Length: 308
Image 1 (cartoon, helix red, strand yellow):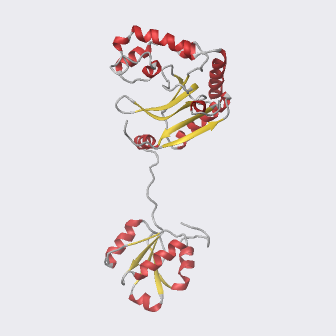
Image 2 (spheres, helix red, strand yellow; image 1 turned 90 degrees about the vertical axis):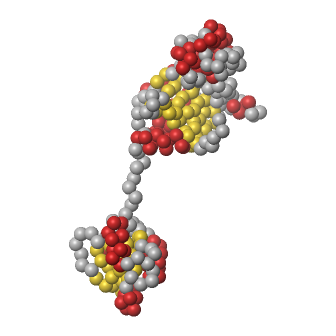
Image 3 (tube, rainbow, N blue to C red; image 1 turned 180 degrees about the vertical axis):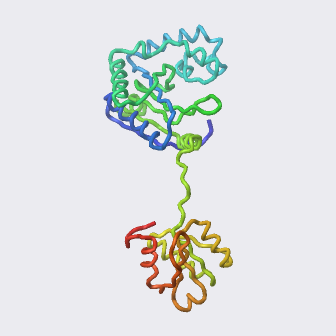
C-alpha cells in the first residue's frame, strides 16, 4: 500500500521474560487510556515458536485446502506459501473459513504454553482486560509467542487498529545478528488521532490572553508592549490593520482578556499606559511605563516570577 505512515513505537531487546511482555502490554494500555480513549479491545494471542509452529502450519494448510474454494481470490492460491496471512484476511470468505480454523494456542509446546499463561496471569493481576483471539497472527516468520493489538469499533461496523505489536525473537537473527529476543509495539499516529476525534478527547478550548493591547496611534506602541509582555511570560494579544479604537475594544472583549492596555497620543507623550479592567470590578487608571509590569502582575494577582 503506497501511503505514508507515522507511528509511536516501543521496542525492548535482549529480554525473553514473559513479565516483560506484560510490562509492554501495560504500557500500551496506559498510553491509550492516558490519551482519554476508552472502549478499545486489547486482543492477545500466541504464535508459538520454531519448536511448535511448523506442525501447526501443516495442520492449518490441510484445513485451508479443504476450504480453498471459499477463500478470497488473493489467498486461494497462497495456502502453501503463508497460511497465517489467510487468518489475518478481513474479506468475508476468508473470515468465515478462519473462524473454524484450528487454534495454535491449543497445540503450543510446553515452553510456549507456560510463557502465554504467564502473560495472561500478569494481565489478570494488573486488571488489564483482554480478549484471546486465535485469529490474531503475523505473517512474518520472525514473530514468536506473544502478539497483540488494540482495536476500536468504528461506525460502519468495522474496527480500527490503534496499536499493534508482539514478540519478534527471530528478527535480529534474520538481519544477520546474533539470536536476540525482542518485543515491542507500534501505534499509528494518524489512526490514534482519528480515534481521539471520534471520541472527542484531546479537545481543549484555546486559552484566552490575560492582556489585550489597544493602540490608538500607529501600532508601534502595541508592537513593543506585546513583545515585552510575552518576554515576561504574560499572554497577550492585539489587533492589526489600523483598526479603530472602538473596533479594538470589541476585539479585546471577544478575546476574553482580563485587562486592556490603552495607548493613545496622550499616553505616548506622557510616557504612560492606561490599564482598563475588562472583567469584574476595578477602576481605569494611568500608570507610568516603567511601573507597568508590576501593576499588571498585581492586577492579575501574579507573583513576579509567575506566567500566564
